[in-house]
Length: 640
Image (cartoon, rainbow, N blue to C red; front, top):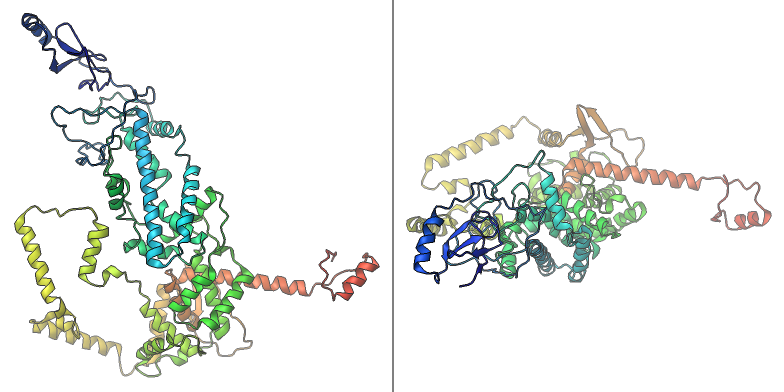
């Protein structure tokens, strides 16, 4: 029998080991407690029984020596062993509740491998960073395969990721100690004595008894959140001059077309669920808690670029503006060249990514340039074209939808202002952002299975319940076509009283909204006013006595809150463009006003420079003659 056994002490949690005594029993080398399940069988029988009674009366220390915190002592190194396929039960610790295992009892005769301090944080850090890298690769692959993004991003994203990783200093040797020190400094006052938990006695803890495995995991998620994967994927698209906006990334992510919410499933297949040195499940480590907003995504991408000292170009204005023109069924050849000239001339700072989350988004700046270009080309300056067009007959809404459908086929033809407004009104009702998974029930259920509740199994264990669900699903499959008929009444087949009730209510509402004494034009204006009031706008009647036909600049009025007074023609254009850019009309109007102020400032500066009179007194005759021969275009710095 060997004289020493390497195992964890059940009393003090020490890994020093047990040493054989003369009585045949083994005692902990740290707290001197006896191991009940180990005995030297080579000891003489009489010696065994003589010592057994004494050993039973041995009193164990009431308060075993507590394990020293890792901030003061480091565990001894041990051979690394990884078991990626081991299933671990969920956390049962009420105090922590962090989803870190294992927490269940071990098999008889098994002993957990002892890991050093370096083994734990190295494995946790390696798995987290590797998993994020896999997620970024999956996202870029989806952008190329599903959304026709240039394959150039796959070659660029590796450099961006590694440079960002270097800027976080997570790979530095002092990261682990700093994370532990920060966790210990968060609790004010003197540190209370604690007893090590028997469940996690082999893991290191800080001075407050908290598992350092979870401390390191929190540090990693705070320095490199999971949402950084989306920010880096968007940033590489921006560097590659792709017309991808943050709202596009968010929509594709919510629909599950870009791996994000359910990416942990693929990561788990590649890296395993967990390992002994990193007992945190992949579903816990790589599953986002909530969706990120488009403003936050754009600001995060700009912040990453600043950290790695990457000088970014402006957004690809032509690609994004071209897509918006196609989406709104506008004449591209007529509008886009004018918009590009305005962009090149003004080049507003909002076209560059900014780390300020509350600044006007880049896509809104692109749309504001399009709005100004449309106003210039079609002379939308409050002349009442919408009022003269609206409800000439009772079928104006159907005419608008038909006009929008026909004009979408002939986008490059010359349009009048009335035709443009008809197209915009028709498109406004078509631009509702409906996700692909909301088309029918099977699509939604499949979306929930693949994205929302990915990796989860049904909670029921009753076979009768499972059989009942299958019967309901078969019933739905047989009767799902019965509710797609002409009107709401078809959904109430077999219930004639409900059908009659629905029809009568529809007729009453139609009579209330279509009174014979009410002018359709007044009704349409009233509906528009209500829509404007909801968005903090105020209706201005059409201009009657126009003294000067030029670009009309709108202003805001102070009435408890800022109210924006605009004409109907401009508001129809504004709200449709705002819906296409997925932003509130008020924010879109603020972006347009900012662009108009910049253009007005540039015009004043240019006008002042053209009317500048140069003072040639004190200039030599040679330079004066040269200046006059060039027609005053000499770039010399002359005094005024």
